[in-house]
Length: 314
Ligand SMILES: [Zn+2]
Image (cartoon, rainbow, N blue to C red; front, side, top):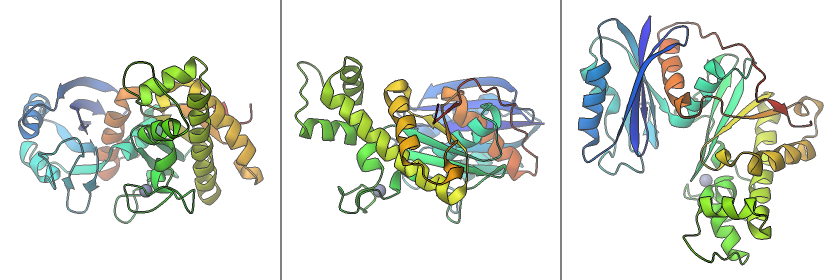
């Protein structure tokens, strides 16, 4: 049994054929280009071989899983674009499932990432902060398809306004541009170049005090949101992906320390925070898992390799 997986990102589209055991058979990707619809059509045409049983799509948001539409922020030509019905026309006769990219990242990491356990919280820390949940071996997408949106957990009652309309969300502290804004407000200056998240990480790595403080502040906010989520859901595994998370120990080390400091209840003291093990393919594996789950196939996660899971309290 083989499914088609699509990963609709803001700058590129990726496609793969993946079988029910989680083996990636073939894969391709293409920049979005001038016509996202033509790019989609070309990629799917190359992979839509006979014998496919389902299609799963991971897409950058916002998305509407009820309407089957997507409006990726970085693809202005797609606003309320009917992605599900477009793919249904390209691959007729098989079910098509859609979920957010962060949800698919979480699902892919749980299925093929080797993190172990029946539940997992995946978090993507980049320009924004997204997330997805696997609860008791099932993707948990919620009533409107938005479950796991940890970036909009409120941490500061009088905090900065967030793009979502609320105040003090995790994203206003731990999103890349928010970290940069905070550092600049504290007096961080750059001799040359643009003060962005990459420059902030480089400065922190060189030991600059304000950039380091920005990472510690973001780590503490993330830790608080993770402990809050785990206290409600009683989960153990957390996997981090995204550009800011790719800074490695710059974020992970203070994050683990902060989780240990903030976790009170005994069941929160062995939270495991790991970096992504599938990296750029997490979304494709998650989209494939989504398609398999939607067509009634049980998902068997890869064995726990324990290659990256470091307990927060170690
Ligand atoms: Zn928000």
